[in-house]
Image 1 (cartoon, rainbow, N blue to C red):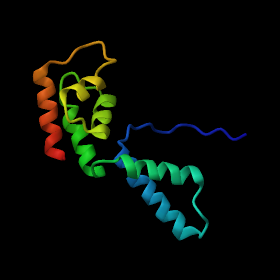
Image 2 (cartoon, rainbow, N blue to C red; image 1 turned 30 degrees about the horizontal axis):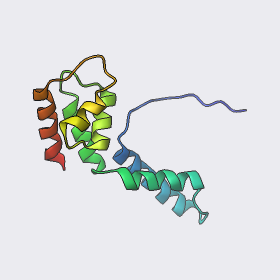
Image 3 (cartoon, helix red, strand yellow; image 1 turned 90 degrees about the horizontal axis):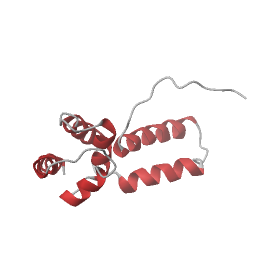
Image 4 (cartoon, rainbow, N blue to C red; image 1 turned 90 degrees about the vertical axis):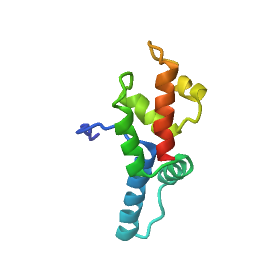
Length: 117
């Protein structure tokens, strides 16, 4: 059995994953006429259904969100993927965290999200 090492780990939004999968699909189509693997097709379909922004916009949104004080990279990615529209949806994302977020901070985050819609 060949064991591979993890060289790098990076959090990606669904939109960025979609872009990468589309690039891989193009490369595979050029290299051969074989049909895509079932798992690959399902992954690509999932990203097409659930990506709401372009890859560049989602990365910009994540970078802007990470500037907030109580923002972890994982939460910023989740927000960019889900694009919450209300305080309740945003609170649900923060539900497992050990801290609470104020209504003012929620409003600021939602205002930032509206700029990218």
